[in-house]
Length: 97
Image 1 (cartoon, one colour):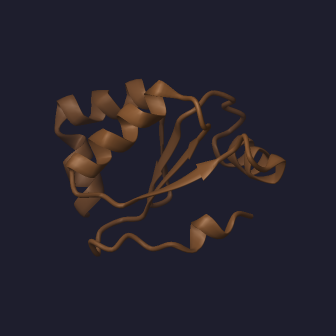
Image 2 (cartoon, rainbow, N blue to C red; image 1 turned 30 degrees about the vertical axis):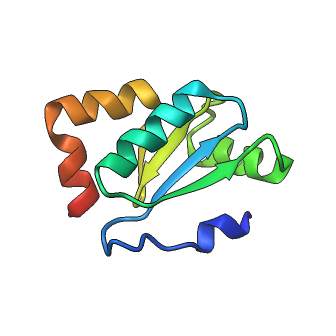
């Protein structure tokens, strides 16, 4: 597994992990939204290491698209799922509880 998973969220809130690739506009938008919310995002580039892609597939239940976002142990999903959580107010709760 990637050494990137060892980085802790410096805000004291839940750890945010995002699986991404180098050329992914939705990944950039997701990271930007999460950072605006004060989250520290640990980004794992699945195009750089096949083992990280395999870990993403296993952890996400077979989802192949990026980004795949996790807050703590919860699989949020992709960018559309993240923005839906933000619109509902649920994202703030997830990041702080």
